[in-house]
Length: 249
Image 1 (cartoon, one colour):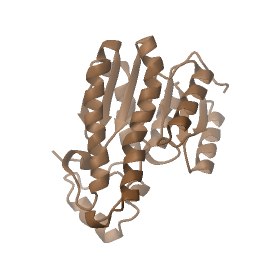
Image 2 (spheres, helix red, strand yellow):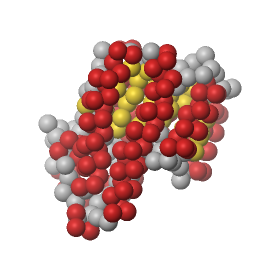
Image 3 (tube, helix red, strand yellow):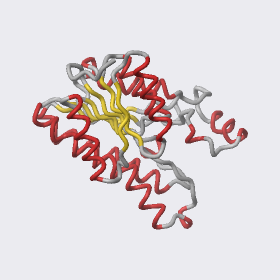
Image 4 (cartoon, helix red, strand yellow):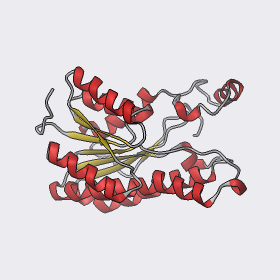
């Protein structure tokens, strides 16, 4: 399928794998042009773009480190040049980290904040330039339950994810008059490679603490993200929605 500038366009950061990949797939299946942002996962992103196009969907993979403002600006320019607008931004790109607080180095801290929080700032500010002109757009930010309640040995991660929640609420108030909705999804434990660092016993113990006795799937989170982007959620803004199986209530 050729790139289509008559359809709405969704930019999904960190879309080569996990929640981002499922989110991009669902938007593509619902007739959106999809911009697959990636940084290091080059082959995964290229293969994903090829797979979507083979199925007749409109997609393009664009490399950009979300913590690098120049690369973000170039990515957004390319996307708008191809599709004329970016109607939905899903700020999904992020990294995880597990360490006692005293062992977190300054470089560890800076990397976590730059990718997980500054990346949201970079992408949102650049995409908003066109959204404000058209008075239309939706920004959906990915936080975490640990941004809501904090996690031991994940201070830098929890801090970045908490910042995303504050960012969402403040920006929603600022751009509401421009008909732009800003919301946040704060998932619980999701079955992605971010939990690969846990061994089987640790995963079983963690699962026992979840009232629904299972981890969430990337597809479940992606479907929620897509719903927030639809007209059915047109009066929703500044909200933090946490699909977590009852782990945090």
